[in-house]
Image 1 (tube, rainbow, N blue to C red):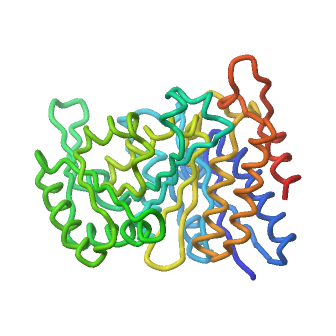
Image 2 (cartoon, helix red, strand yellow):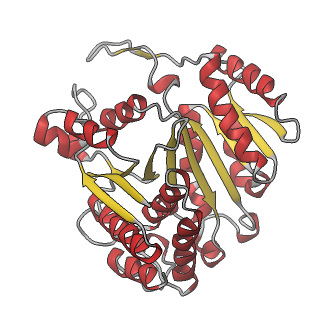
Length: 353
C-alpha cells in the first residue's frame, strides 16, 4: 500500500513523540511491504510564531493531499493569554471543523502491569475496556459566543441539531455492535434544552440497533460511576464538552494521560490521530515524555484510515510487551521503580516488532 501521512508535530512534547511515532510507522511500512510518505506542517503556537495563524493555509493544503493526519499537541505558556485574539487551540478546532471530523474515538483500557500504579483500587480496574465516542465539531466549543474582554458578561452557546446527534450516535451504536453491545449516552437533559434534544435523538436512533443495550446517564452521575464501576461501561457517547472532560477523567483508569490515543473521523476513511495528552510544556525537551498515547494513535491511523488491522495490532502488541517487560516512563513508574526515557521506551517497542 502507498499512503501519504500529514505530520503536524505542534508544540511542547509534540515533536518528541511524533518523531518517534513517525519512525515506528516507517518500520511498520518496511516490515509489511508498504510505502508511507510523510509531509510535515505547522500548527498551534509554533505556527502563530512563524505565520501569525494557528492553522496556516500551507498546512491545510498538506492535510488535503494526505490520507490521514498525525498530530502531536498544541499550546503552551508562551501563548496562554486568554485575551489573545489568536490562540493555538483554535488551529486544532478549525482543523476538526474544516475536515468534518465529527466523531472522536478515545479508547481507555487498563493494563494488568500498571494496575498497582493507578490511583484507584486494583479490583475496580479489572477488565476495564471503554470506548468514548465524543461529538467533535459542534456543541459549546463551536456555538455562538460573545467575549466582552474586560467586561462583566460573556457567553458560549451549546447548540446541537438532530443531524449532528444522529451521525455521532450511529457511530457509537455501530461500535457497540462490534464490542459488548452496551452503550451509555451521557447528557444533562434535566437542565439543558440542547441535551433534551440529544436524548430524544439517541432514543430514536436506538430503534435501528435493538440488540444494543442503551443506558442514559446525567453527566454528574457519569463522572462518579466512571470511578466506582468503570468495568461496567462498554461504549460511552457524549457531546463535545462532556466527552472531553469524561475521557480525560478516565485517564486515571489507565494510569496516566500519556497512555491514551484518539482518532477523529469523518464519514469516509480520512481521520486525524493524536494522543489525548496536551503539550506538557513542563517536561518538553527533557526526553521523558510517554510516547504510548502517540504510538497507539498511530495504530488507530493504520486501522481506521488505511484498513491495516494486522499492522495496527502489531504496534499494540509491541507496546503491551514493552510494558509487560517492566519498561516505564516517569509518569507510570511506581515509587522506587526505575524509569526510561522516551527514546528508550520507543526503542523497546521497535525491537519487539
